[in-house]
Length: 245
Length: 151
Image 1 (cartoon, rainbow over the protein chains, first blue to last red):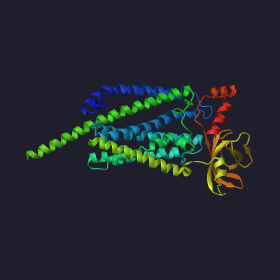
Image 2 (image 1 turned 180 degrees about the vertical axis):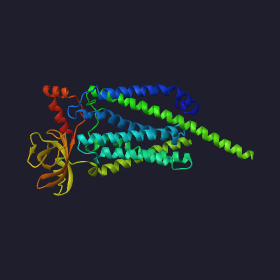
Image 3 (image 1 turned 90 degrees about the vertical axis):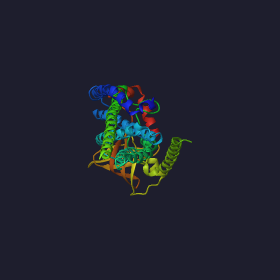
Image 4 (image 1 turned 60 degrees about the vertical axis):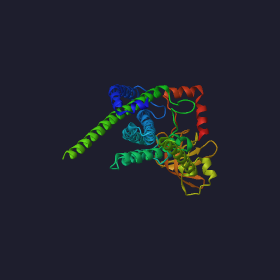
């Protein structure tokens, strides 16, 4: 199946059909999630209405890790099997993941001040999350640092794979070391420790953010494929133009 | 072996080695990565008076006293060891008895003089009515005990 869609032309046709559906689903899920999260869910017994920051913060943090995992897989596939679409998928994923990481850090800071009493602390969870943002930015910078796009893709793919060690560190930082950040509430042994009335909007937002990622990634890959075609045409035109003279 | 198999083997071996190296480094630096020491750590490590450290644990039930001039006295416990803390300043909203807390400051003659106090909340989220119902049915205490055990 992956071989089938690794063909850029076939992928473009498939993407054009799927994209509007994913866009509609994203709008639907995020509107429903925000409505239930902000207006139709209870306040927390300790944190009051401040807990509503969770409905943006937690899905952003999930997506930050999900996008980085996708980025590392795409980079691995690009390095090992040299699929033409893997590099494009990686390049398309990085800025989306960086955006989610930034959102998680900012909303976390806004949540930390009223609850913990600090905008920022250097505990293992917060620090490893900041490192993740730098990994995304480093990947993007390195990808664009070479005149030859193939060399840029190769070096940045290696960086992305090396940076993957940070993903389990972020996930388990709250279990391995004592931190100010609390441990996981949803994905943990013994089931979620979050009431069903709050879990529903959280999961809606989580799925909505995932479809948002797929939507934006499709747009960006389609742009990159078209852009590559234009560049190839221009090169051919330049070459034939010269030979005519 | 085909070239792509060679590349796959190389990437797999490199990532395994990198993971092992990271695990070794992190376990070697465990003491500097932890955000705070528990009262038991503080006693075992024999932290010298005057060294700036963070102390974390639960605010002991019934230990919070106002000593005038914005000074609050309380005890931090990990249910094994307890440390007396004195703090001058505004406390975060979530600061209350039985709640997690992280205090930054220095030990002086057995009393921890905090310069900064942060509240630590747990991973449980529920509406107030559910919390009340749990307290009424007596299931609340079990959770508190579990919390003390983990950290």
